[in-house]
Image (cartoon, rainbow over all chains, first blue to last red; front, side, top):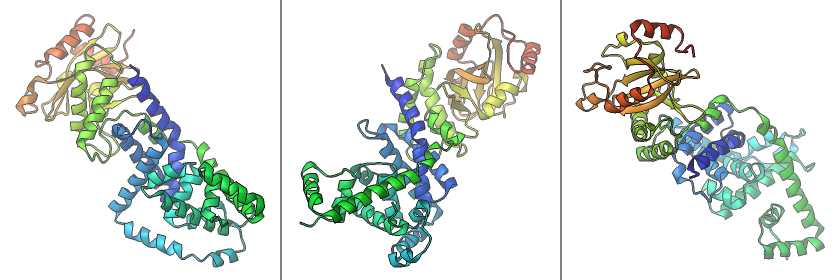
Length: 166
Length: 257
């Protein structure tokens, strides 16, 4: 029986995913220490809940979702959730004109940090982690239309922040 | 015809179905503005990907690597659903490489033991008595590992977290010791010192476990039949006497062989 082989593969696959999980978690949390804590919690949860992983599903999507949920739980337990939502709303009011007036070109990281959270996470999953729209929508538990609109707005803002030089 | 920027984005990302893609391709031939937008979407994607590629070659902290390699042992954080933990653990033990014929029946006890003890322990597994090494073998950690390495059979007070029964040299050349953990489950087992770890070869519920009077027993005298049989299978010669036990401890449980 190859169950032990399969389980071996899971552990190895998760090890292989760790750099991407950390990268995603950093875009989520904006803090490398929080990111690693959240990844650790997510890895532990994933290993406890392997039975909930559909074998036909992508492991990376499933793990991203656990990372995100772990972060939401963490924020909730810190009682910071309200503040985060406020910040997100404020981010929506960052005027594109004012940004365009800034003489210096921003780095991609700085531009990403200025996106509202929902756009940043959508951009992170699709453009950085390379998930198809459908997978990214499932990670975020939103309809695909919501995902594409967040992605489009996020890209538009990034384009404005980064300039046209590609 | 008008094509929304969202559609162009989806086109650039390769997300459109055949019909929609064909429609966009047709429009691109006649509208250079649209072609420019698609190129911009692609360029932005590449730029962002490139900016975040360095993260992938950063070294991953050891704690994350070991979390990923560790078998689910339920002693970690936020065990929201105990049944999940039990199920995961049961599967996990079923997969475990059998070290001895004894290992099989010990599995479910190991699961409940780890869950039972693990829930009361610290967030990052610091003091759980059992853990799995990189190869998936069950090994002693925390107080159990400490007790196995340092305690002599004579030290075993009823209040100690770990009580040592007998110590002996196994036919494999490793030193092995029987132990009983205090607590409601009060499991007993045989651990053998191998490669700087105490590998757990047998685990069994101790005879006194039903009485709920942890401590009301002497570790050596109440070995369960499973432990006794494991010892008989493993042992080479006679159990160590107090002098030999102390000598083995002073050598760090590394036998001459």
